[in-house]
Image (cartoon, rainbow, N blue to C red; front, side):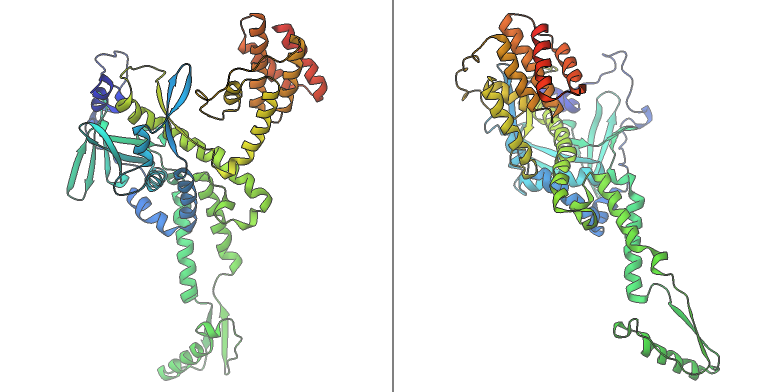
Length: 485
């Protein structure tokens, strides 16, 4: 067992927060809570066991998000020779993708998403043999209690099912959560902010079900002025029920004889506004979970033209953020403690990464980037520079061919050629900035001058603000870059 592994078993993430050693560190938990289990926020039992099973909008949004995360494969990269390179078949990769004897990696990742979104926190036990992780097993959050420690942040985790309690050390539990700005021990569930809308939607559906069965409240009152005996009352009641009750008589006109009066009592459809209430609740649930409403059934605001854009935004704004947070937690709590070299550095040599290359919603981006990559290669950028510039995340450490000769022509010709490439990427501001920096670096290298990346970034921002046509912008970039270099 290396130093980092030992440290992990004594404190979460391998950090020993001993206030006696770090004199200026403030406590993260009140002293009276030290060693006492933390109850999770929002009614976990209701959220995990009932809400998702009773609310179709919540179920649809969560399933959409869980399926998206589950289909993305994770892998391990190692930092060597100044670059991140994929480690093929790393054992930590199989912890995520191979899961455990009871479920697939796909199901494991789906459960993690469900738990984190419903409860704010997701927990997995790191099952070990001879202190080596062999698989991950989900822990259901409604049964987990975090026991804080003033010294080591987390003293232990209690997993309690009825009368049975199992105590797990911090290094035996993987824990990822939505940060609660008021408490580091509680995950902030998105549903806690919309619990009122969820309950309102459930009550609206319940009201509608009762209305279908009993009309909700009586539609009318029949005032029979000549009914004086019990027999007359019972006869009138049976006659009315026979004429208007049951689905076969729904909304049928009817005629009553005698001295009778009918007065409406129920709310109108406009007053109840049932449909609009449910639509509003659907939009609120979608917003809280980061899933566009048209993707979970909002046909009023969806078209074939905007669905592709919404799917792309869903992946870029919601799923990639979730994946990034998850991969950092996996790296910090599993990869480094159990597979790292024991050095406590700010730039670790291993990390988890995820592969988005097979996501259909992002393929249009890939085609656009592929076209730009070809243009960059034709302009003289190396394969490695193109890979880094466009963030393809390709492993080219072993397969990259020998560097191609520099573009023919003098420095001015090269600057002009590369500037035209940069202008073609104006639709993507980040890509344009990177292209300007690469031009600057290329010219500085050719002249033996130290690049000034900050100045290059500043010039890129200034170029973006200029209202120039493409040809004029090429001349402007070429002139200023040549002058600066």
